[in-house]
Image (cartoon, rainbow, N blue to C red):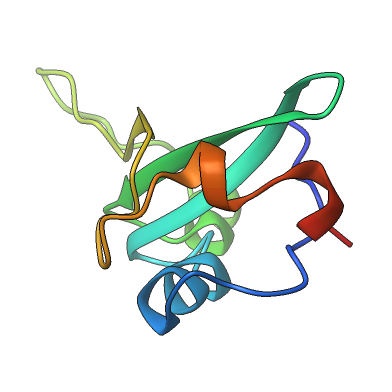
Length: 93
C-alpha cells in the first residue's frame, strides 16, 4: 500500500496525532490515493509496531492472531467532520 504525503492542514489535533503515530503500536490513521483526486482514510489498530513486526519472526500459535486491523473511515473519529468534504485534493502536499 502506497501512503501519500500529509495534508497541509488538519481538521483537528487528534487526526494529526493519529497520522503521526502510523506504523507504531496502537491506533493510527493513514490514507491512500484511490483514484484521480480522491483519497481513502484508514483507521489502523496495531498490536505490534511495523519495526517490531519486521525484525521478529512471526508468532507461532495454534490459532490466528491479528497483528494489524484496518477499516476505512468516512468521518474523523475525534471531531466528526466529513473527511471527504474537508480534505479536498488541494490540501495534500
